[in-house]
Image (cartoon, rainbow, N blue to C red; front, side, top):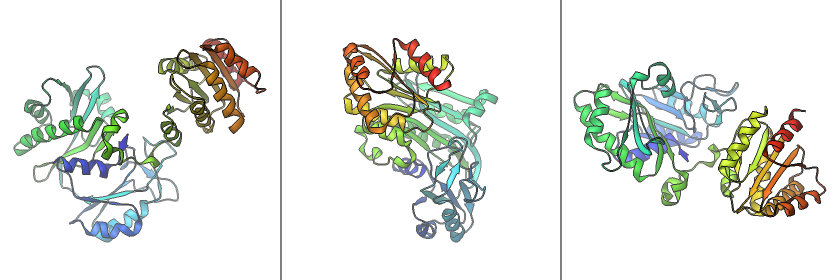
Length: 397
């Protein structure tokens, strides 16, 4: 689960990390009051969406020109005006895709004098199963671009969980970033704050880009992105309360409410599978035969008829789907339950695209009989290879 910048900075502030003073704005009429509560003389007005590249982004034609989602203002009135221009508009960045995201929240904060821009991140390293620091002198840039063009400018190392964060970790980062004087001690302290927060709050990713050295020689977190482990949110109720459902894919949101593992993709063949490994194999074989999967969908081993029905509804709600492949291997999951769920869903939402069903395992014959007697135009498949061939042929012609 991701949160907005203003929420991330509030969390940073609560742990003692240096951030600018700011105010969140939800309605245009609040903008002037919010800006007036800040000292100035420079105000920064930032669109709040769950995507990077806001400063380089642009609003759709007819919205708010092409000035990007991060703007500077030199008066309270100008800050309020810029906030009003962005609220309710659609911002397109390299991370949102062409559809963009609607700006429903604005963050106005005090401007900062910037001497140096740096990059810092903490993340879970899946290779070592440890928390890793990533630091670079190339702040304000996409780290992927830095890694591709100048990888020698990136420092990355994992922290041994047996010792946890130690001051030498902070000094290593400070020296690699070329910090001097008081900024070195500030770096050692800040890295400890961030590491402890990362662990205590069950984070998956924390990115400060840029981390700046101000014109007074102090460190400050100028921007912040945070991602949290969704499986641990039950023990982080205050973090879960920050969830902004308007920023999430409606299909993924609906899936989460029924405990379905769903991820939207860009293809044309919808997939309903039980088991993550089988779901991955199903997507791979669809690609092997020349098509693209429209989603990853694992209904789980203990899916009910109702869950299967909702899964089918989610797949068919995707306008890009031109065919559906149901691939079930019934171990814990019974094939007759899947069949009943598919039939119920088709009768409820209708079937306007080809549907291929491959069943194998527990109660497979009963499941096939249910589908045969349904009167629906369903294509039966004998195995995964046969199912993939048939759905690709049905979609491609």
